[in-house]
Length: 317
Image (cartoon, rainbow, N blue to C red):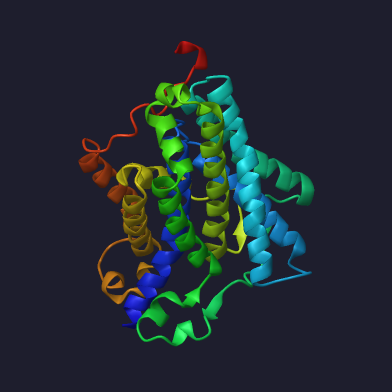
């Protein structure tokens, strides 16, 4: 059972940031704006929030500092995503080119600012956020060791975001309008819905969640930020496509890829995998091989919302 507990706990560290970022991409793409800038937004969110932790960790620590950093990450991600929203919605620029530009800009910006301020591109921080056991809940048989020991508060934040996303996208007026603007923007405009505002909201929500996802990925897996999120933004896009832009399927896809990432990164703690005559490099390739295989088999059945990525011109109707 200890091995199972270990695998589940490690899977949470990798699956939760994938889940948060993929859900962010879903909000943007269901509104009709393709957002491949998730990687760059994660880097900006992680950079600014980790810098915040680095500056204030001598004055405060623990969960309060982490929650404040989450707010900073979300805000910085939202602001950075406005660049993509303005280019895609107002300027009607090619959304792929706009997203690529942000992905190229983000790590360069983080490295430049870090070196200019402190002379090094790495930003160290102390991990004071680990929760050994949640009081009371950690003592629940089976469920306690799985979910409420050796965890981070960001795990529960990610689960909360997933539940809230399902409610918002499928059971609220805003969610209905968001989907309408992505699938039938002309029809939405004809009944008085401001398509531009709804699409801005979708991209901003995407930026908030991607920024938070950058921090959520860094905190459990490292003690310094090196202007990289290990390609997690692109992996989140794969999760989004595999999940067919639907909340429940995205949740399943995120945990599938989380397990693959666990096998790749923590195989030395799993006796069955450790004893196999397989090199370290092969294990590191597992998540990406799984991504290619899954996307190859699911690409024929995966279809984005129909009007997604098509610029909307109010004067065209």
